[in-house]
Length: 463
Image (cartoon, rainbow, N blue to C red; front, side):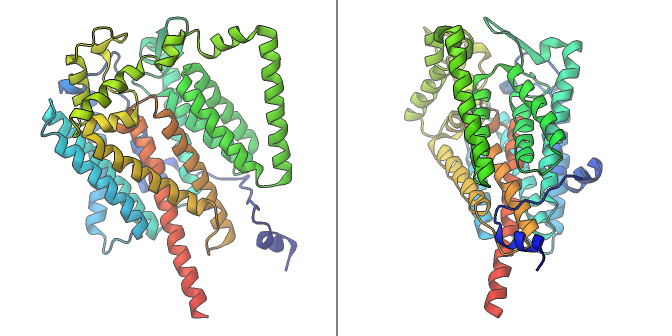
């Protein structure tokens, strides 16, 4: 046995170095897996608050819906023409939960204040679910190079962030927001959510850099591009979520070798020392004010007024457990509620600013429970295979585990940032599609590893 073969057999942390990774044609990849095209949007290129309850239809609304319908109809055609559909029961359980959740959204149109709009958004939800299902069925039969899925997801995020930068000198009010005491914030507006695309770039690049899944120079450069964009948003929820995920990635990497563990420990020590030096130089009060963007204690305690919204949702759903109606119910009822001492501009509040509160407001406690159970199932399934090797070739298995680990890191980011935004729960938003793309990758990789495990067990029994 050669030395390299021995290392592969005995070093469970050995990682193939993909230093000369060659991207296939982007057009070829997106035509093969058009579900990734949903990540592009298309963007809503207009400024101002968008009232989903008004039912106003314009060119961009038609383009958005047509984009989704075209991709989903292709998925429906492939599912209908398939001779057989093979999905492991663990994956079927998750898809079944997602289907029941959609039925609750559709049923909520019956008591929604804008029933046709709620029903339309429910259809958009089902069309997205069909795309995810078709992707899982497709990759179960003919798996792709999984690392390409992550790279193309990052490629989409890079293009969207570039579109924001190009829009900046042309129409800055679309992509920038001025906040008292904060100055200009590059949030991306209706073009692309910078609090999503930039952290996605940062997380994928950090993971590929630490595990040598691409040339480290390229990964490092793209990492700092994403990190700079994230800091430019000045969004605390995004920064905190990114810090948590990067810490988890570093801790996971530290377990691969003693040298990696030493790097992480020294980095933690350096961070503590530098933080102490900054506090000593500028003072604790000034540092606290800088971290919180000069916001008052009342604003911090209320999460910039979000707790008032969440309190309204919980109180309403205590007496109306079925919720308010998918997507549109909250906006109308929140407008109608006469909150005498509200610190918020009720007219401009279109969602709950919390994806969990949004599911509660949309279809009640049952919908929130199903969504949480579904998320737990997805995470448990991905973690199960990310933490161990299955009975397939070593290199392929290792790459699959890396993709699962990185996808789980992205899902954790969505979960944490979701405490401050609702976009992950609303169709036709980029965050909604990015979350579904990551879940589709987790389900697809897990389905292949389940099949490989079954083949491994069958081979052992045959001996």
